[in-house]
Amino acid sequence: MNTQEFFEVKATTSFGGCTRIYGSVDKEYDLDNPDHLKELGLANDNKHADGYCHFTNCFWMVEERKGANQVKIALEQIESTVSQLTENKRKVTHTVIIMRKLSRAEQKRFFVDPKTHELRNKDSARGIRIEGVQETVKVFYHHELSRVIAELRGFDWASVSH
Amino acid sequence: MLSFQRPYFESFECEIWKDAPLKSLEGTLLDTIPLRNEPGEDYETLRKALAKFDGPYSFSEKVKFLFKYLGKWKIGEERVDGYMLVSNHGKWRSTYGDIESNVYSTDRFPDLVNLLKSNPIVENKLVKEFLDVFPKQLSQEALKVSRIYFGLGAPSKTEVGNLVGVYYGSDDYFIGDLLDSVTEEETDSVRDALTPYKRTFLIGSLKDVPSFNQFVEHLFTQYHIRKAETGSITLVGRDLDSFELLYSELSQKILKPMAKELPDKDYLFRKIKDVVEARGTAQTHLP
Image (cartoon, rainbow over all chains, first blue to last red; front, side):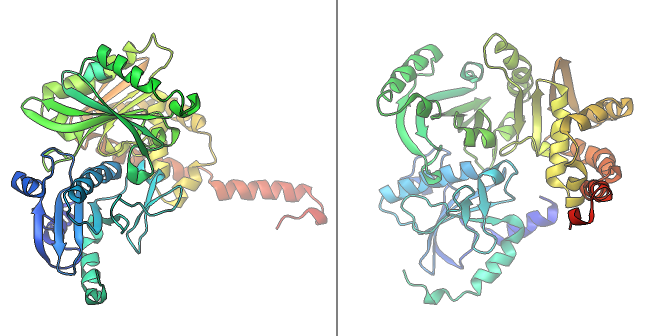
């Protein structure tokens, strides 16, 4: 990532919790903060995602940011987090991975739909889903974050009911 | 491999998976076996645990089980949770290799490579020494090590720029990986120029040019890549971007110009068509 990209990403994400993909948040947990882990009843190991938050449009999102581009590890960290959250009666409606790019090795197993951002299994073309979460996992690349956030903010979230 | 990593990676349990290493990837967790971090004892525990599956699963199903050793990396004062995945299933082996070690990423250590780079002594032990010694330890076994990749994310032979260290059974593999990377990465014109030629022909042709070998040796020095050669080849980069810089320069200065000069797919196809049509009759004209 070059310097300009770094600052673009930094400007559009909140590194203490979640990226504002779906608008404003009114509840946010930084999962690198031991106090927040404790409050949510999550194990204090590294096998958890980076953020858990509630957007004002009623989405409950778990987010994993990947600096080193490994979708499989990101999925494992999200799976572990969602499983513990749901066991503790917490809600999760959306899961997202934010990363630089899909590595060439992982392109054999996965692809990301450029319109829906859905992470799909390349063999079956099915969207990848975390147990207990209805929405499929979404992947957003660093270089497209600013544009995606602007587009999603233009979406009429008020018409979405949960 | 667990024995080699043992001073730095303490494994406390092993998960046995069928089809894939995660539920979200349509895998099934068959069992979780607690371990004591004693290789002999743990091997026996796992053997007994596997015997349970003799009835429900056939031999051909069992040899595709995936084993995920969960544990903690201990590098100096640092403690980071991680895993070692043994992917016996062909689909996952082709993506992540036969055996893959990594950490569950944190802000400070997004990858095992970052953790190893934090301690030069351990890095030397677990990267350089591992690449030098591990393949030799297996030399008496039926299975041989052909390649070991150390790199960020999911290292691959078609992404040489992401590597930090590598072991090859033969130096031909390194040139082959460079060619595969440039073929995957570059535009259709480069791909079309290289794909008609056999890989072994391109590798042999490059190796037979002394100035190519000299240029590569010069790049190893320039980008701080240590090379050890004893029939096999071990390359270890000093910096995270050593391989990226080497690959970029080799690709720009040699591989792409070479591709540009070679008769490409379209040229060869036209030649074939011309020859066939020149010898054919009116009824056998090709479109």
